[in-house]
Amino acid sequence: MAKTELKISKSKTTICPRCKGNGYFTVKESMNNPVDIVVQCPMCKSQGEINDPKDDIIITSGGVHQLH
Image (cartoon, rainbow, N blue to C red; front, side, top):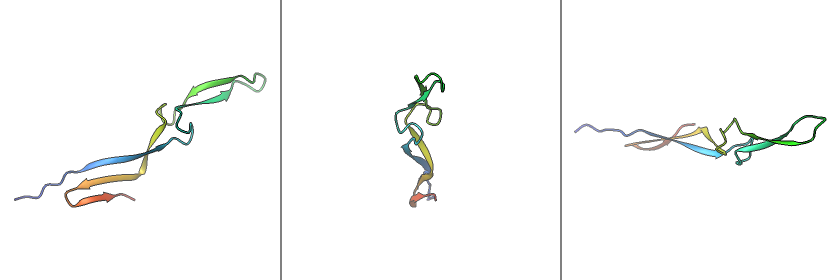
């Protein structure tokens, strides 16, 4: 009987360092006008979390393996 392997890749999510998990941040409109403008975070696409490519885990029939 042939041994089959199931490969599942899971990525660990971490809090976005740019928006600190909010999905948005504020910026000043200009130096002359100190009004804050709310901007959607482009780094996490307003999700608040990003996938950390360093923490990929592959599950096979031989066990769990973490890629470094």
